[in-house]
Image (cartoon, rainbow, N blue to C red; front, side):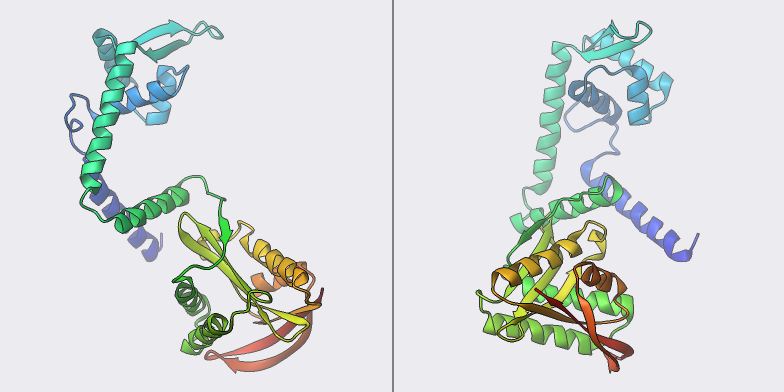
Length: 305
């Protein structure tokens, strides 16, 4: 394993220890209840899924078979769980909560909800939203990838964020210097100062409150639109956002009466170039340049609408 991978693993373990302390998952029993975390999870699974067997519970919760068997026996003795034979497989024994078990589960869930509410009550609403967004992102990264997102017009603060995101991306991935950030800031400032809604537009791609993409259409001349600053966050690549943003620019340009669209890029941005080529853009001019602290190949692409 590489050094950086081990460092990342240590960072995740530190976060895990911090988080479990915050939610009390290391306590022997949950707050204000007589049930352990494992017991509560078993009751929750039984209350929210039907037709479960001991094997199902053991696999989904990662519990030892003997330990699980003792817990189930204890639940039966307390009248919280009952057993029945499966109609489709006579060898399988199904577990279900009794009415008393459902009542106990409801009280456990309320206690857990109250405990989390106590944790949040002194936290300002804005910080709560940031926490929820961060948790959603962690869940997305470690679980099934969330492919949902929305396209929306820009809001206050978005333009500054676009400059920051693009500057950080191209510095990190291509080593470009501050000249690029200055150029992006100038483009954004001009767009804000001279914005013409009949001929110009910006789209923001957002997922769980996080800006994950953006693109601009500006006027080059009366008949030519310019596609500018296409951006897709590294966390959102592969979702088709770049293709969707390019399609939106073309639709808007046609609806606005433009007969031609052009764009400027450099040859090292291969993923973006593939999107432009797929949309029908043709390379019309290229030349070696020294920009952003690097020797690059400048390219102009155009599309007749």
